[in-house]
Image 1: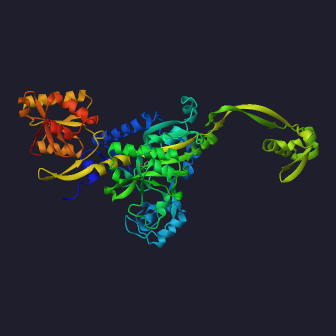
Image 2 (image 1 turned 135 degrees about the vertical axis):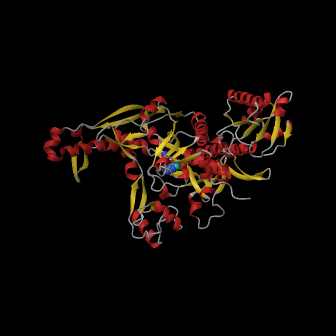
Image 3 (image 1 turned 90 degrees about the vertical axis):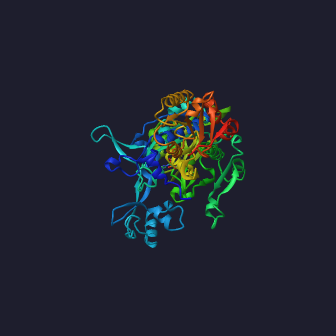
Length: 598
Ligand code: GAP
């Protein structure tokens, strides 16, 4: 059998996604989701919201996509959100320098190298411009910041940036969000929406775009107290490709190991229970949305590969046939520690902590000094202020030192002896009910565009039906843009058209996304729906109208099998299949099967 259809060609022809603004020549890295793609994307987002917001009892917010410069100064994106750029002197095309090196050598994390080292590797390996073939040796490699800059307001305005990740919109609102959570950890906040990255070389359909959609959860925890409900996912099997496996000289097979979440934690393969928990949740979610989990693994970031904020990160990677069989990162689950909240506290001067109440109040000794400057001044001259500060510091560090008649402190590199009486040292007993802590963050971050792309890539199949090759998109029913298509067998027979309309409105009334199609032969109509992944087609024919009670045929997308069922039972049967209480096999054994030409 010939190869299946091309994903990008099918996506364009059937209205899943296509390059945006093509009428004006477009701009690389921007895609429009057509009617089928927008519906599929919406279904992915709805399933994500259901699992990561609703079922986890997290709150969803919607923050602006443009934020002022200080936000990204504090977050570190202005300084470090860079990729390495090499420009071809011949044709002017820009390339990701680290990707070129990785493609031509055994190196897997060239982005961890300095730009000069990458430039040397380009020269040593005689790398040429992928666009025109000119030699890239000797070309400078530069850091290129990926954020899109803009100006807020008229005139020179205030510098702002389009957010490069939805996460920052959650972090900057933490002072309000913690109030909403009544100051109690753990709590999680989600956001689904666009992020913008001025990628050096956007490519491969939706895989590397400049406007992307992320679905992110920021889980705020007290790292010393809070534990995830690991038991709920402990038996979920994961394919883990940990750092040591990646560093093996010749990893066996694909290199990953298959373990349960519990085994991953107990065997210390995954160091954080929270990351392990979300790996389990992610695996279950991918199964639910119908990703081919035989083509899914979780790969731990190599040390030089981690983002500036992450102490550990595991990427969900899907093997994508239409991307040359490469493993493509579709999500990342990382441990961001207290990096972001601490940086925003520092940058804004606001309070990004929560008050952690102790189980029992603690009694603490608070030592203070109030040096007599009328004594210190004449004695130590211009150094008196520094001596006073050193005394305060000593009182905090080592209050017992003040038990002696005199203490020695160092100020500006010199030692000074001070009579304890002149320091006016005092210790007060205070009761502390708790302390202010900066929460840590665990972040599952999903790329919606890449998920959509992987679902299409994994779902696209070719087989032979009725003696003809056909392409069909085997999407999970929950993801399919259309739940059911209704066809009047012929388009010039009023009773058939009327009955088709009645069936259509009954299905819609029951909450199904149903469509009517009466153009072209029945075979062509089946093919159209197969290619956009519609799981079921209902055909209204003359035989059925004459049946008592009236019947229609119901066809299954993946097998092409058909059953004739009473029209009045259609909704109930489809609901049973949708709710997982029945499958099409059961339907075939219950009703008369139909052999019709495809
Ligand atoms: N807040 C964390 C964060 O943004 P990331 O790994 O940079 O982490 C998360 O991005 C996900 O967003 C990735 O796993 C990927 O699925 C998606 N993504 C990132 N850049 C993308 C791009 N240029 N085009 C399409 N998807 C992208």
